[in-house]
Length: 139
Length: 264
Image (tube, rainbow over all chains, first blue to last red; front, side, top):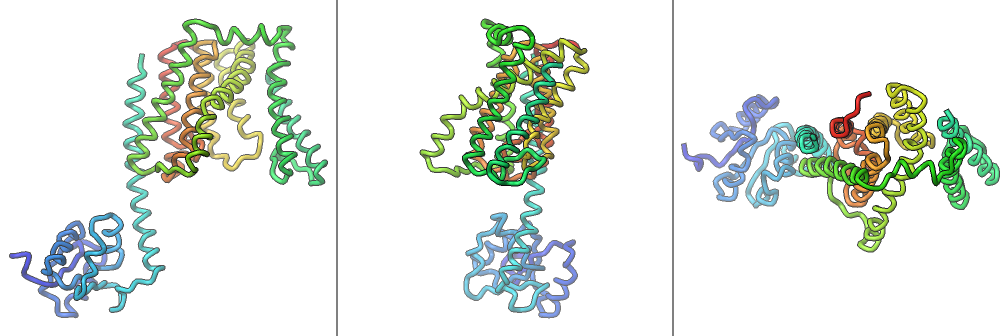
């Protein structure tokens, strides 16, 4: 099936905790023909927006879109062209205009996960370099 | 026991000095040794007196042994091949710390961030080598040449070394400090320096290790920000206090032991 088939994209992992809610949201708005993308393929959706193949994107929550922006997986300016509608299944219709506190709360969740990944990477790399130093200094 | 007694007198005299200065400034006395609340001029006097107390220990101790300082200390810094241990110690510490900082920078647990203007930064960094050497020399003379040497003369190494390590670590907390969870880091540091002295019976190796460590930490301080969790990267000037720092100190101690090998 061609990537060009539908102007509506749903960005949500099949096993996302809110996947059922997203399916309900999509069905209630008659968007059954929407194409589903896993979160890791959000950059494909961005390319589709730039090519004007997608005009409406549904996310489970603002967290998913903002996380992709903070991870630099997408370019936020590419998501603001006129005529592109962004929906969040867990929010009322006007939620695209996020409260700053909501954005900060999203950032906190993202930052916590990022710090956890960095700490784990830090431990692993530290052990590797310490082993190297120890071996280098062996008589 | 002369060394232990002399060192134990230092916090007592520090407290008496502090109390006198607090009384002079019209402030209430307190049990903790801390210079907060003292006017700046009296803080400076307090610092000078503290340094003078440590210098007094270094001068008085050899006299109590019936030796002049000029005779007592030189054997701990013999000229010739043992001086190379200074370079080994410094290089080993720079290797460990340098690799750790590299690993932490690559994983964004430490960030390179210049926080001063060029002139101020240059001024700060210019003073680091001499300051590192001075701090390390003073502490090594005090805790190894005076204290540990006497402990090793009086007791079996299995007792002398733990006492030497404990006193060294505790000395860093005599004055009120911001954080106490770094104590295991100071214990590990004390173990490294004490083992280094024990293996060589001169100050060159512990001096190299100590000065190398102080050099790297002081040079890095105005240039980096610790963004990782304290259990990983320690805290500010104490990166060795985190779990990884403790592991690093343990491995380096083992390196020193294997390189200079002496059985306890």
